[in-house]
Length: 49
Length: 311
Image 1 (cartoon, each protein chain N blue to C red):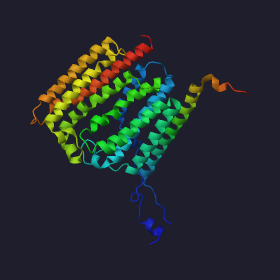
Image 2 (cartoon, one colour; image 1 turned 135 degrees about the horizontal axis):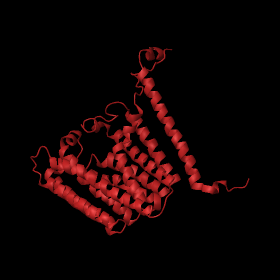
Image 3 (tube, each protein chain N blue to C red; image 1 turned 45 degrees about the vertical axis):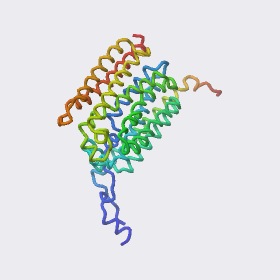
């Protein structure tokens, strides 16, 4: 079966879109990580071992 | 013809692989509108009584900006047909074919859901609800319903653009108050003279697209009268932050002067002959209206920061 080959420009913009999505997801991870610490504060560590 | 033979006759362009750049998706968010939303929401947040952790304030502003962007993307998805025929909007990503309508719809919905849920989870649910209502109001009430059905479209639809300072206020206090309603009214009443000034000299564009803006429904004379009416109301409401005590006398004087200049420009539009093809007064009012709103909120923002940092 013949495969569809993307043109060079399509490959290039797909890569740029992928990088943009990766950056957005990374930002979201950092956002929730820091926000969790900010919201819970020291009480986050206040738990029985 | 078998499936594989059929596929072999097509290249990637035929079956529509996207060639959209990340910046095309960014354009869907209406960045210029977004910047005004961020600015007014920040002012509402800074002026509000009480405190919020700086990082959560950053998250709140980000969510409000993304929520505003999402409603912009949904607006561009629904309005792609009329954007195509208007000179101001024909270069947008959907009319030019860089992004497909379905992609814009998905993008808008995902961003709307993420922004509302994040604001609700990390800041407070009342602010999240207000943001969700704002997106719904802009995308459904204004874009899908009012815009094409009544010349009062931007009067009522203007509420969507007026909510951000109220959301900013709600992020800090978790409530609505008279003060935040005044911030809402400042933008709500400013919207008609701002957009009708533009509509006066873009009347042909709106007519071509079949959008019932005030000048092509009620006529130039009536529109100019209504611009003046709303400009006077805007100028009166503009000084209320001082009258209600959440802005200083400096703001009071500044807003009064700017209000008078706003009304003066609206008066010039009112006196502009219907035969005037250049419409310099309308262009001047449109430009000044941006300066008016931005400068009033800038003074509120600076004063609020000065109070917070004890200056």
